[in-house]
Structure formats: structure tokens, C-alpha cells
Image (tube, rainbow, N blue to C red; front, side):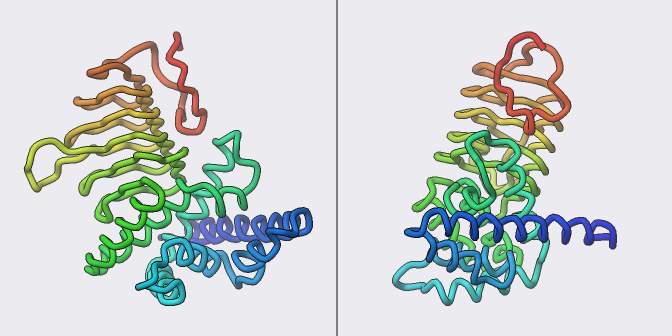
Amino acid sequence: MSVIEFSAAQNVREHVWTTLKEEAKEFAAQERALASLFYGAILNQESFCRALAGYLAEKLATPEVSALHLRKLFLDIYRADGAIVDAAAQDLIAVRERDPACTSYLQCFLYFKGFTALQTYRIAHGFWQQGRKVMAYHLQNRSTELFSVDIHPAAVFGAGIMLDHADGLVAGETSRVGNGCSILHGVTLGGTGKDHKDRHPKIGENVLIGAGAKILGNITVGDGARIASGSVVLKDVMANCTVAGVPAKPVGGPCCENPAAEMDQILGDE
């Protein structure tokens, strides 16, 4: 990462953290019954990194693996790769900007399970890269149990991702998702056959994948493409193309420049 890129990432993280603290303070005054939650999760924390590690640890803890122990493990992962925390900040911004139901960073941070599941995957991926596959699988399983989101820890997801509602999302081991994508509930990034090699989809940047879409096999979905809800995609999709149907085929004209940001799922004439 260049000096300029590092500075930009730091600025994004600081913006998110400053705003989160302002929102938590305001909401604690408005809703005193939840004030202890806002203070414990955010206002009493030293940084966005520590707040994120602590909140995820509380969510993912079990009687056998305590929140205190998980928090230490998660902080170790964040210290080893700060880009994971920067990606989380970009994910928060993506949800706030794209989801009209989201009115604050705090709402997403505490209550949107798509965001929480994605951050669980990011930590699991960190463990996977360190060769700690059992811990990675443990977190994958917890995410499936708690959030109905099953992302293999070897999969690669970029930053600025929104998982909208997220129920029933499945992403296989060799799947790849580029920066800036929006993925709705019930989506499958699946393989075909029993081949252990590269067998899952490669999704470009700024792609919008509608609810219930199934993208199967080692195929490529180009940057800025749009996959209609309920579609079954079995072949490559060109950049800035809209596809729909079973099997999916190109429909209408080219997409807007960034369908993931626009979140427009109406497939009328472009």
C-alpha cells in the first residue's frame, strides 16, 4: 500500500470512528435503556479496531470459547493486517450510502447482521491466511448458525461490500468478489461437480447481485454488471451488462456506471 493509499484508508477509518462515537452519544441520551450497550460497545472503546473486535467477540462467543479470549484473537488478526479494519470501515460506509433503511453507522454496526457476518468472514479469512484453518472453520460455522451466512474462509471479498439482509448467502471456497459490490439475500456463489480446483465464480467490482440469484461454476461476472433476482447464471457475464432468467441471458441495454451503488433492480429499458 502506498503512502497516499494508507493515508486515505486512515482517513476513512477515522471518519467512521468519529461519527460512530457521535451517534452513540446522541442515541444514549435519547434511549437510556440502551445506554449501557452504546457505552460498552463504542463509547468506552479506544478505537474502531477495538470496538469492532469487542462487539464481534460478544456476538460469536460460546460457553466453550469466551468473548474475552475471542477479543484477544481478533485483535491479533487486526494487528497483523490493518486492511481488514479499513475494509470494515468501507463496508459501513457502503451500507449507509446504499440502504435507505439505514439511518446511521451505529444502526449498521450494532444491528445489521449482513455487516456482522461479513466482518466475521474477514477475521476467518485472516486465520485462514495464517494457516489456522480450524479456527477459520469455527468462525464460519458460527456465522452460519447466527446469521444464516455461509462464506468459506478461503473466499476473497473486497472492501466496500454490502450484504443486504444476507439470509441464505453462500459463497464457496474459490469464489472472489471485487470491491464495491452489493449482494442481496439468498445468493449462491457455487461450484459445480466434484473438482477440487478453481470451481467458483469470480465477481468483478461494483456488481449488483439480486435476491435469490445463483451464480455457478468458475465463471466471470464483469465489473459493473447486474444480475437480476432469481437468475441462474451459468456463463460469463460481460462488464456493465444486465442478465436475467433461467438460465440468465443479457436483457435491456448497458447498466449504469455503478449498479451496486444505485441499487436499481428494475429491468426495464435502459
